[in-house]
Length: 417
Image (cartoon, rainbow, N blue to C red; front, side):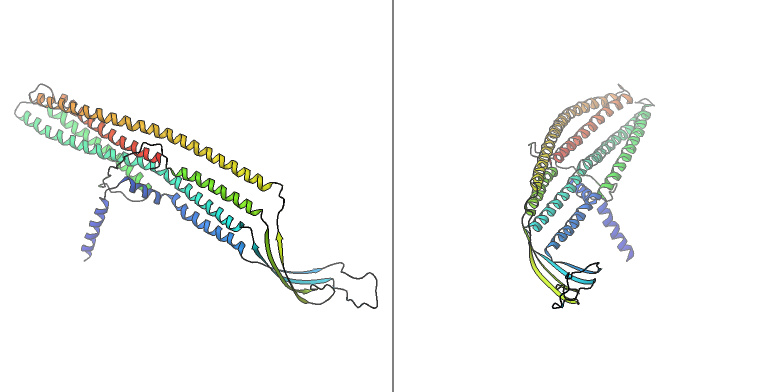
């Protein structure tokens, strides 16, 4: 039974290990795995706590005070009057009070403070999104570099197979005296070079895969295939980058702060009550311990603040103008990058067109060289030169195709699509 379970586990593992990877999935895993992404939950939790703290202003404020004092002088009449029996208060006095203050009308300051906190939290979350978005160009570079090694390996395998087949023909020719005895050595040396190239490419591929694994937080099997993305690009000037939303949120946050400043100027009404026990109580002429209480309403209104609020509002408006200038600067730089990347796309399209022409010519030249080699017109070294030229042209084509895909992917990232 254990063997069956182990066998099924191995099947599942191999199926996962060989699962094709795509660029979008790498984006998603990188954003989830990147340490910065953990800040999103922390920012949300912090904002919730701050909002709860602000809401406590709606609740009654309860204070307990107790004091014992000794004073050098107490109230008394300067002349004695036999008709008045008033006991002089003690110089040692005691008091314990419980005071309750309740905000009845706050002018909307609490709701404004909560709105400001929410705007601040959303802005902070967007800053995290902006930083996570910066991962995409790095993932692009790694992903398409791995794609390139994948294509180079395949091209070299094809070349290796063709050289091996040609080597068999050469050895047969040597056996029957149709080809020079040393002709096979050149092909054998070429096979060794191909093996070296494959080893070098595989080493580079492993290094890049290890780097990608650190970003996405998941193991990548040596047998995993990386799929080609569909990178149809929109060459319009629309920019949908998270930075643009961040600028808008920053201005919204400033609007909320300005609103809170205005509401702070409105009158506030409090209800209060105090109960206590002390000697003396409210009746200072009764020299005994007494219970007492009083209740009331209080109005607080900062009628004139020396234009403090007005100046703070003006400072916030200036800050909005600074953010708008940063937004325009970002748009300018982004449009420049888009234009440069569009030129890259055009360049690689032209390269691919010429590469295909070169490959067709090289195939024709190689076909002639094969015939000449069989007839002893050229040496195996001459043939290998033509074969190498063909495969270099094919590798150039693959390189330019992947560079085109990279340029298109970078264009989409710069644009925000």
